[in-house]
Image 1 (cartoon, rainbow, N blue to C red):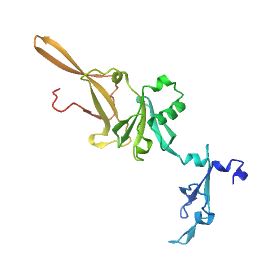
Image 2: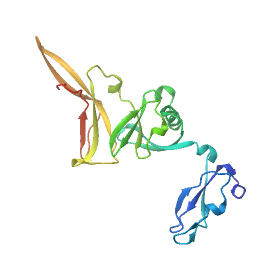
Image 3: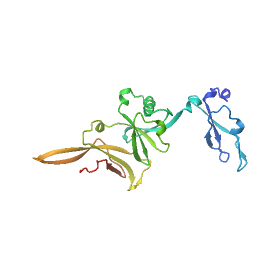
Image 4: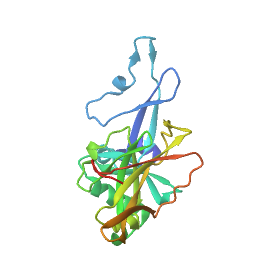
Length: 229
């Protein structure tokens, strides 16, 4: 097949065909002992044999591809107002730092710019957790969404007593969450003003995020238990 296509045989991947619909079904893993007759085996339920295969020309050898995990990462260059999605190949035994290095090449960022880039995962429109550089790639579940964003200035300059507010998008009611919405968080500043002797008033200030939405956004502050705000 490689000779016919004039490409290295090591860079070919085959996928079986669904005998009922003719659509691609399952990629065939590299194996030295697998016979073509085993790949094109008969379906005993309907006595239909698969007589076709799909092929794909890869950018790297199949043996190398099978050591990597494909992660779909959504890059947020300007908050939640815009997004770009990339399919990135990361070693299965790699860490988030390896993912950042692959993303850095895709975005053509220098090392200084990557220092303030963070990776977080979300599910059903809600932020689950921020992934640290030493977090293992294999620990990322297939059902979660992966996002990358610049850490906002308000987070880089947080003071003692500042808190995060986590927000997600919903339709009319908080229980009707946009499962494909992009969650975010922002900083609430706790500022105390001395009004008179022995009396202090505290105010909360929201900084650095545009919270406009056509439908709604629900915010939840992560105040420590027992605090008064």
